[in-house]
Amino acid sequence: MCLRRRVAAAQRAGRGRGDEWAAAVDGLRSRGLIADGGADDLALTDAGRELRQSVEDRTDALAEPAYRVLGEDGCARLAEVARPLSRAVVDAGLLNLKATPTVG
Image (cartoon, rainbow, N blue to C red; front, side, top):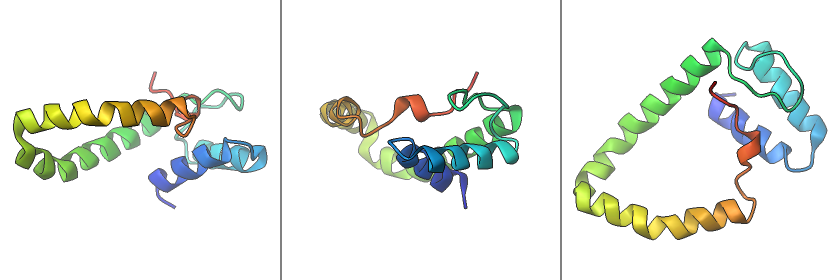
């Protein structure tokens, strides 16, 4: 399973299904992506940081053409209109920020 699916599954599992969350974290640890530690310690290893950066770089490269079409003003407007939606998602607890592995 790719990292993006694992993280999404882990985040869903982190909302009440402790055994699935633990299994997802253990899977990431066994791949050397998350440092050894407690269930709440989700510090990325060097390998985890490298993989995360490669996913970010690839995502940026794939998204760039769409943003290029919008131009600078269009991107600013998109950020402006999307901000309330993203805030609502976070405020509603639909994005578990505590379940996101830390970079440092």
